[in-house]
Length: 267
Image (cartoon, rainbow, N blue to C red; front, side, top):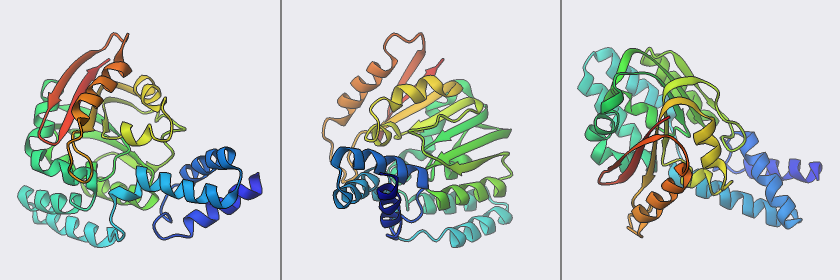
């Protein structure tokens, strides 16, 4: 079985589409698919399908991280907040999740985090390009920012961006289904992350929300599919969230914005 798993991982990451993934993610999904199917070819196909659903469908085929960093660096050196915001927004357009948030960016963080601002430390789970929204967030000047994602190159890009922004903290790639980050923070972001992660493990939402060491959680869900269709998603995700917090002595505020349903949980 171990030899088959090695062959599966090698086959999956040989594809440019999946080459940048954290190997633990590929290995853990592959092990489950091998166990379920038994044959290597079927398990490889199923693993790629899962990886597309939870990650690859959100990113473009080409991610010129060095060029983006150079643009961001020039904007930061210019000293103009608007120039920096403009480049950040342009880069965020290349990730489906943050692209959907652009129309509400000016109000999203100001509205959902109003009652807990200024935020002094952040944990961004399954971050994607969300850290590029730091210029819109009500953070304390010295706020620490930790970010985790399943893509190695993306995590490195975010780490360099945090350094550019002179934010202490860091970014790393890991399998969030298998490990709950241990940093203690004021606020943790789970922005549109649970629907993807729960495709891999239905219990991961509860595990993350209970295990993350944050005073507040901002949990959000899409209200439209990636194709832009409204398929009753608000009702479905609202009911699902209430199941996740049922029986918990947590305070919850809800926010329905144009493209996103969000909940601020105070533990």
